[in-house]
Image 1 (cartoon, each protein chain N blue to C red):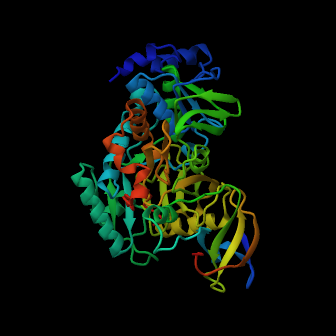
Image 2 (image 1 turned 120 degrees about the horizontal axis):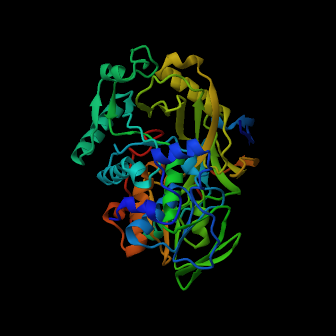
Image 3 (image 1 turned 120 degrees about the vertical axis):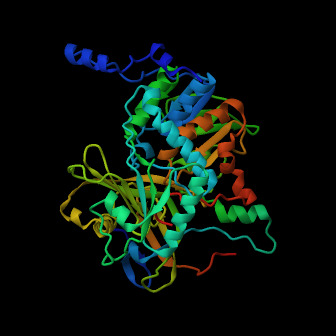
Length: 427
Length: 88
């Protein structure tokens, strides 16, 4: 382990602290940029395609845990402009399969210590996470998930309507509701985080360790010779690299196609929306699979709503009226008191769905071409652990135990994971 | 709102249809190898751009359609009556 306090003494941006804040406040001196713009080299040891939380975390842990700093992160747009900036920033680890629970719990552990480690306020708020059950069948699944979680050491339990009402006084728990609430899976360690801050924090820390971050650099081709990756072609010139990591979301199949690797992935948009800010009243994250909706209140007071993926595959991120109508009806079914709230904006992000609702991580049929893709609706919460394990995979050439179940070869071998607890909505 | 020009019912809201997915050739279940069969089950081309896919008009004529759609804009060029089953 590298002593995190040493990070601040490396060349790079100044350390953030209360004293620095005061000094800047008094002197009106401008803050240095959080990361530098570097010259694009013609060769790197590792090229990571995709400058979101996954790509940046992989670069950071490569440098921090394994001392590999000749790394470039390429993004066709700006850092965190894809899934990392479009998710609903919910963190939890109450999954259904032991593989999933262990993996996401490690991510939550890393997220908890992230602000201190990166010297960047990522605003993690441990609000607790409620997944509502509206039928006997989903109550049974909640019980199943709770027991799997407990065996894996994750705090999680099934609670009844009166306890739900105590946690969320605005919830309609009467029998009059269209889908009466029978109970919920309560997961106290869950919460929300500021997703942009996670991206910026990783970018700043990776940059200070010597990683090159290149925005507006689109990969247009991947060179493979004799079954080995040799480099990438970009809109800013060719780069030679013995290792290329595909850490994109939404474009995972298009990037993999460039290396001749086919993926069992279909891309679906997922829409989300945010309301005007109101006083804090919603302490926990509330999810309803039956109603295809999840709700949380940010530190700013806005309510963030997310849905399940759109009903058909698409690369379009345009919002639709059907979504807004359905969303409003479902939210009001849960909390009728919100009828007067107004939506501020809506957006969509692209979700690369796999057949078993689990990611695809590790080596592919092409030597040196690794994937960290297929993150469906659960990619953001896995960012740190995906970065940590992909970095280990790149540095040691071995697949860590934590992700051994997520290999691409599982589809050809018929060993699917079956993570139905994945998105908690839509299936 | 996206309209699909159903050849039997005219232009209808896409909400009425079920999305079946991109057209794929199904290998023969008896003569296929395990690898071919699993590739058929799981792999997708996931095209960004114009592609042909199957939709099912579940709240209308309940027929299967072949739809030409641009997946980056959701523009629909044509919808014609198609086979009820994947071609084998």
